Image (cartoon, rainbow, N blue to C red; front, side, top):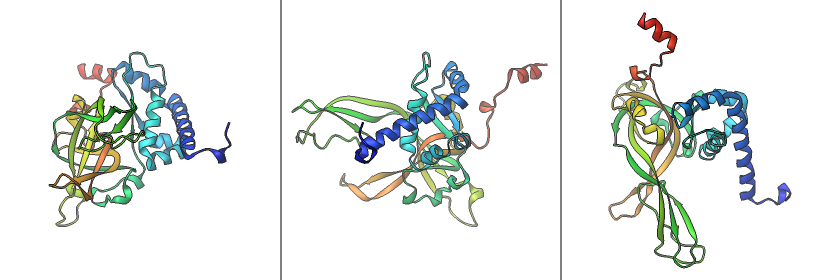
Length: 278
């Protein structure tokens, strides 16, 4: 086994990722296993984790989640899918209840916040239809047969620029990975504004279970919601088709909840049902 000092950055990252998966696995087993199995029985493909509970159990892991959410959310989802869940779809990890220092107003979001996890509130002003979106695509090199996977984070479909064998040009598309996706425009709530300030807006990207029929009810235009998500940049395309040096900002949502609860979201226990009927 190689010494820690001789390990490459990629090897260190792989070891760190494996350790994070194990720590999430332990945390879920101790704190959320019953809820996980309950969600699976109900046909739900996600588990909502309270950030404060995670920070009490593993403060270091919780801190990493705030600053490296992309990698840590993937680690949590791998840990979720390691459990023996009969007839379960791929489970998603959702996080709520971030600390106060990660609650931010839309107008305060800047480039220094890119790639980090934040929580914000606002009113839904616009909402697109749910449509399939490509998240990744696999290409084959005609010269050497190498398979190249290209992630698709932008609205413009990306193809490989070159292969490891040196080939540039056209590659054969083998497979596209699609998810249900939807865009929102979130506007600052009037009560957070001073005097005659105009409310600022932010685009929010939702996917998978966040666009299920039940979730759609809580994100109707006019609804006040709380969003936990990653701040990302998206390129601005010029009329010429090339990309501008300026970028727009977007929130990739990990979790969405209503600030004002609707009748659809009120959960009634069997005992409460009995009392209502009486």
